[in-house]
Length: 595
Image (cartoon, rainbow, N blue to C red; front, side):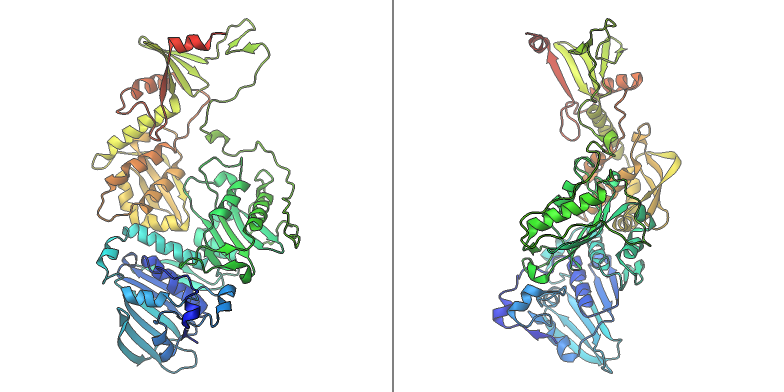
């Protein structure tokens, strides 16, 4: 039963801004529907939530008195006394959300309580009831929130672009749907059905519904039971980690939350297995006694304080390591089988957490060929010192010598080029130089009305996560302005038939490039700005996705790099701001060789 909390309890609740954007409305209404015992929830959104956010459920519903009272501040059915705050098992409990929504939007509520013959319709705006009447309506609740921030023009003005707001709404929908596999969910945007998730038997099947069947081969199951925390879920294979952060989820007792601390625990488990800046996917579920955590520290309830956070950190680290420890060679997850590694129970005193011993090759790295740091290491042979061979062959460390005009080019281990300069020698980092050259070439092409597209001889399919694919469907036409020919190709898949002509002669990671492109639209936050405002960001992401062969630079390419880098507007630094070249003077060379 809904009732207004007394002041002494209301004052204990972490108050604050609850409704910040349309996705905030989605979160609060869908959480209320889950708490109402619904088995079916439909989310209807128009114009990325600017004009309509509607949530329809088949939960317990409300009678007339409760329907009126639910819009009062601190009116809730979830807690009755102060102690209840420290044992929360529901999504909501503060009673702030509906009052906040009604203060900044036009709200219509249709609801009928189980066992009642008729329902009630209430129209409320600016926290005032405008109309109320009895109606015939299905059991459950139907909230329609229109024109958010219509009475707060400054707040409405600073909403992000439709793409950003849509992605935020999709994220909230996914965060609620994943941990509730037994429920049916629908998501409709601008009259187009985005998702229809039928009731699933378990979380594994729900992930298949959302992310597609190929996710089965990408994930490794994790499971642990201790006295402190129960851990279950899935983590991504190391070789499939990505630069773009997608599909990182933590849930505790079915509630999505964010935890930089636990994220560090997961990343630490992947030490030496993924390059710096890459992030694996994970869907991790924690089960903790409600009395051992506090969800009442932030209005959005996405930040949670744990009583034993350092212990949970170590248990999670050990659990993930156990799953990926065998050189990431664990078999692909089988969604028809159960099984998990055994994790020893934590001693009651929690004084120490001993990580399981794992036999794995510490040098294993599925990204070895992608490492961008330094020169390749070569075996040191007896008799070779200081860069030249003492065996009599006189072979210098320089592997190749190229000449272009009057310029001589020496190549060092496929990464560095050395050429004479007036004051000494010039050392060029070929990879950084190439990035600068292609970066400026691509930017110049983007300044054209539409850059040329190089059609692929063999079109490539790329599988996206559900959120990225949904965003792609919204920005497909805009992507063409960046020189890509990409079309939908089945569930969560696209087919890439053409790439920017500026990269026609390069080995480029097409999948990473597509994800980089789509991620750029997610953060393009102003409706008024043109796409030119983030051309540099897209160009930088593209050059970072070039596959660079460090074993050897072909003669023609070495010549082209040296000639082209000096034609760039900014030849001294890479697009990331790192130095491209350095002059070593004759004096410095002399000093190097002094005893």
